[in-house]
Length: 142
Image 1 (cartoon, rainbow, N blue to C red):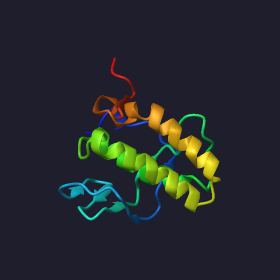
Image 2 (image 1 turned 90 degrees about the vertical axis):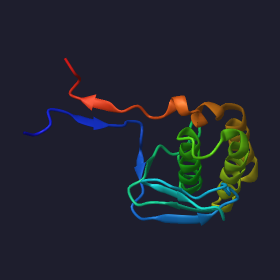
Image 3 (image 1 turned 30 degrees about the horizontal axis):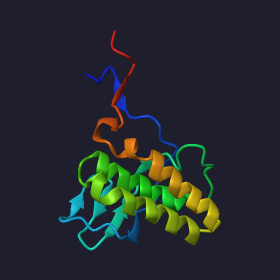
């Protein structure tokens, strides 16, 4: 008998069409390996094909110059929400990496610095495990 409902998570805009790997300054004490994100003790981050993310947050407009940085940043924040990394130890490094990658991809330095300050001041809730994406159902239970 087929399931009478589906389960899903909302809030995503983009989905990765191929694996993406990058060397980062985030070096956990032990390798992290999840369904869509892998991070080893040397800082090698791989975000796997199919990973979904929402692009830059807040009032920041999604552009081709900040989309790669937002992918990496969202994956790192997700590792914090899922308790694979601690925000206390890694949030600042993830925020600085977002700024660095944005500049590398063509965002003006002053704009990237404003992005960084926004993350520094307002990003903490996005690293909190209690703010994990909720699993929703359709149709709703009656």
